[in-house]
Amino acid sequence: MTLAERYRNVIDWFSRNMPTAQTELHYSNAYELLVAVILSAQCTDKRVNQVTPALFRRFPDAKSMAQGSVDEIFELIKSCSFPNNKAAHLLGMAQMLTYRFDGKVPDNIEQLQQLPGVGRKTANVILAVIYNKPALAVDTHVFRVSARIGLTVNAKRPIDTERQLVENIAPELLPIAHHWLILHGRYVCTARKPKCESCGLSDCCAYFENENKK
Image (cartoon, rainbow, N blue to C red; front, side):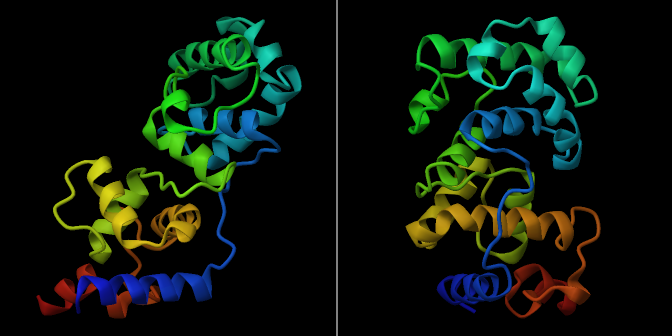
């Protein structure tokens, strides 16, 4: 199977079986999604969704959070992983958003990455989900699943994975492709024991093909 055929088959299957894939983080605006994605680093979406309701009641927008304190933010997010760092990042992010960007979440990757706690992955999530731009965020699930299926070759870093996926997926599909791969990695192509027997992509998956040759 050629690389082009693999991409075509994978995209066709996802398009038919996951046509409305979307983030599992709960949010109602760009600020809330930005906060949620920062909190989701090395933390489950389920845990983040348990934390954010109280956090957003106390800090409904960037301006209110900018006037808060690290200690108060910490108390509201302490059940998340790395709460000390994340509390500092959230305060710094809110202050920069308020005083440099007039409270509006930027719509370009350079400005987004100036915000404390925002790396390329988080920036791409915002661009894709909020602004529907042709961006694709690479987290551990996307990195693993792309390599297993055979969509990427010798991708050593997330940026390598991103570049290969962007080269081979139509721009209009990039925002949803992130959700296809992350959800597939979360529920089917799991890290320790992929559920190949129930995977609809087994006929075009490099990992499944190699396993069957053993």
